[in-house]
Length: 587
Ligand code: ADP
Image (cartoon, rainbow, N blue to C red; front, side):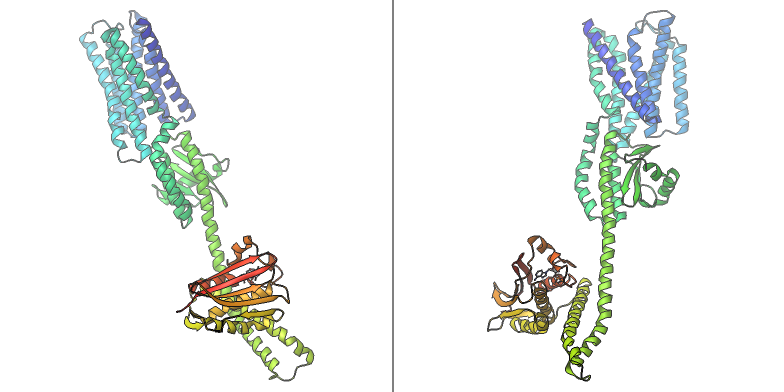
């Protein structure tokens, strides 16, 4: 039995010793008041447990040891109150009173010469001194237990769990000391039971005061689950950088339990702030010059009660600054690692949003250019075309045979330009939502023939075959826009197939749709390129030496779809392409 008790006593000493060493190491790593008081409290408790077996006996040495134990005991209580003060501050006056009270009780205990031999009977003064010491210490512990528990309510998951754990830790210490004090008087069995209970409480103290990574992960779990689903939305659907940054720091705060946070952009402006006014955040940022220091590495770093997470933005270094309030947990290494990963996602997203807005601005500029250019060029081109036609008709007098011979080419080229301008105009109309169809019931065969007539000049180098039904195919169409599509398909067929090759236009009906197929035996389009064919300005390899805007097919498909139809392609490199325009038939 005695051996067992000795082993248990040793185990308790080792366990408390390790706990003290662990908190002392954290203090050395983060030398602030909070870590310091915790290390002092647990070290004095560990020392007390260590010297406890040596207490007893008589003589000046034994008395000095008893007094030392008394001082350590009260000191542990004092350090625990001060540790609590770093979370929930005590007023300066109260702090003075507590310090004075502890010193007085300690002095009283020493003056009363508490007997070194615990079995000896206490005199009335000594009993009062023991009671005073126990009451003082109890107050130092019981108050934080309730204070932490109350402070936890209404807080976010990580903070609340941390505060409750602290409350539990204080309760654990109280329990250990109380049963240790009274258990001794219960004989060997009593000591055995109290030792076992003490050992069982040690793990609770570990997780409360130095929460391991797995426990912090567990605390974060409820936040993490929500976080994962929110991150996707956050990263993909934030309309601008401010909104993204604002949402991002909200989550950064929740993940590590910060009280306020802000984001510094690469130009040192405050992109977003939470829990702190933007101008205040700016002052903090200017005072601390986070970005210059952040330039030294990618890792988050601490300054005072702040955690700085560098953001490697495309335009330069930025940072997320999380301010840990008094009630927030001590940031652990795994929180920091989590934040590093988080910062990488946020950096990429912030850059993506800037890139998006830059692309949008470019797109707008492109549309504006299309609009202006097509409008401005149309007037002069109409005049040029008009005069060329008059020359051709001879209304402006006789031209030399040489001049006459180039006229058809000039007219064909001006038609080409006019056609491009028309595409550009329609495109800018479509982009601005101004393209409205003027649909009427028309015969698709007839308007396709009209469209073919309009581009016959451009198809002169090819063999054109038209395969059409004798009866009309009626559909609700905007004649002009429908002809734009046919003209586009025909000019493309001519442009992208060798001179002299066949071009076939085949008109028919299929599954309630009127179809116009334009078939050529030209370059053909690979499957891969077909994916880019109907995009705005989408031109592919085979178009390198051919004039064009890359707008025609995009515009044509949009027009087809506005008719509730479609424009599709089947093509094979080297053997040619078939484009099919389909619109619903009118019964
Ligand atoms: P553009 O002809 O003005 O370049 P389009 O939008 O009409 O623009 O066509 C887009 C691209 O698709 C063309 O640049 C060309 O590379 C390819 N293309 C279109 N029609 C054909 C075709 N019949 N045969 C081969 N390639 C074609």
